[in-house]
Image 1 (cartoon, one colour):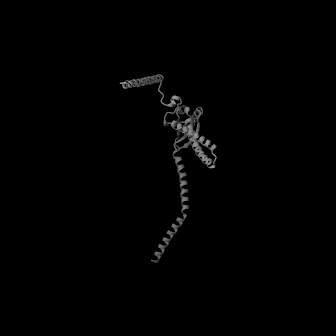
Image 2 (image 1 turned 30 degrees about the vertical axis):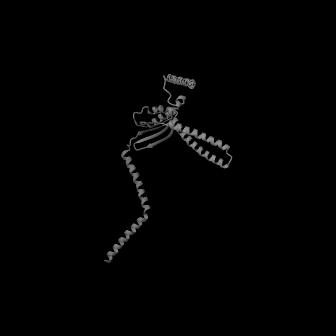
Image 3 (image 1 turned 135 degrees about the horizontal axis):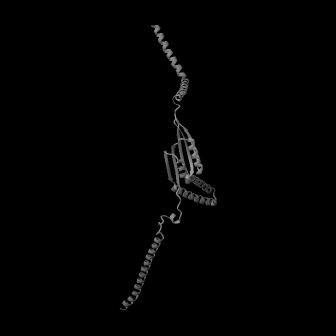
Amino acid sequence: MKFLTKMKLNFFPKILFVFLIMAAACQSNQAYKESVVSSDMVLDEEYEEGEMPQNESEIEGEVMERKLIKEGNISFETDDLEHTKTRINVAIKKYKAYLASENSYNYDTSIRQTLTIRVPSQNFDSLLAAIAEGVGHFDQRNIQIQDVTEEFLDITARIKTKKELENRYLDLLKEAKKVTEILEIERELGKIREEIESVEGRLKYLSNQVNFSTLTVSFYQTVSGGEGFFSQIKDGFSNGWENLGFVFIGLVNIWPFLILIILVVWGINRWRKSKKTNN
């Protein structure tokens, strides 16, 4: 009996201790839930009037401007070739563009000029509108826009990584003492420098294409072919004389064969005559 009484006295404090721990845990869990709900409510209130941030760059405000390459190609007919060329040159100067190339073509029924213009991207639409002013019909009008933002970011990240690696090799080069170590590090540095220059060249090209758009303008004027009959006769005489020259040159090139043929024919005729005489 005393043993049971003693066991009860020892058992009740343990039960009480367990209940106190469970109660504390429940209160802590409830407090955690309230804290989570409260935090969600705060977030909802903060972004209620705007959009929730989609990624880390938007949260930090580091959204990069899109990198776009714009190219255009237009072709049309004009009544006055020189006037159109002058009007285009005025527009080129006005919108701070420049001529990358200029070509002229003379055909039987038309004269065509083709201009390749590089223009600051922000002035592309204005230049195009100025050149297209007064043009009733375009034989061709094609505008293309290429988004190179992803490639631009990728190349920028690669350059950053390569330069960090280059700096680590430079630090190792300062600490290197053996000749073999120095030569190995310098060889790796050379490879890294070549890769950096390669991707920097690509980045420079993309930057130039993004900053300056390309517009190819081709315009032509129809000309009458009406010198007509006499012009064709003149061309016929000229072509005939040229063809006669080609024939003469050809005969000169094969003169040994001509002599051989003449000798064979002469021999055959002589043999026939001698045969008739004998008969």
